[in-house]
Image 1 (tube, rainbow, N blue to C red):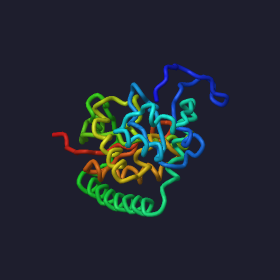
Image 2 (cartoon, rainbow, N blue to C red):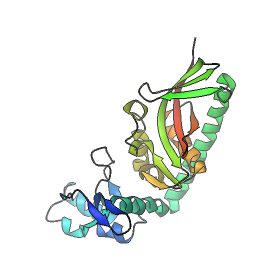
Image 3 (tube, rainbow, N blue to C red):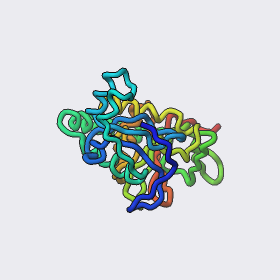
Amino acid sequence: MNEEQTSIQCGEHGEAAPTYVCGHLCRHPVQRWFCDAPSPETPYPDAWCASCHTELLKTGGEWNEHNADCLDLQILCHHCYQDAMARSVEALDGDAEAAWIDAVTQGHHALRDKQRALEQDHGISHFERWDYDQAAGTLTFSDGGVPRLVADIEFIGSVSEASGTWLWAWANFHNEAPVVSRIAAVREWGETQGFLHLTVPLWKGDATDGWELSGVAAQVLGAQGVYRVPTGRGFLYMALMSVQRVA
């Protein structure tokens, strides 16, 4: 599905990177999108719908002259691509939606207990200052300039209040490797469960969604809890993988 083109001119967004999707997604974005996980080299991977995926599987997972005609390949600017893919979370319904609600509910209850334990054991909300170090993969809590508690962290995702969106950390390539080495497991689990909210990189979401997704992520990652910090434009959610007092 790849074409050699570095930029296109979008009538709505101006100059942008080109992306490639099947015509079915272009016309009806509220359905599951099939694509590889985004990467720094390919942040907007080629995407296709379920019917095209069925044709792809018939040839062992390779696009060729026998199955490519079904694609009706379309080019979108990367902003239009993101906006269209974001709508796909609306496709969750029926048993899949019920299962997702159950996963969110379980994650919420489990996270509530974990947060209570963090408060009881460490008083985690009462420190004067916190500092995270991406290179070290740590979040340090201190009082009076003295470190008191250090947590091993994994970034989960962030909420932008300006755009009203949630962005998964596995799709945010501004993060350093030590804080995003494990979060891909959440996307992979979402793929196996068919939970679109875990597999779509960016979609409309707020602070409540941030906590709900963090609860699910904490369960998948086996985290001890979650810490949320303000970013100036919204909030960043971190999984606390382990917490230790500073001697």
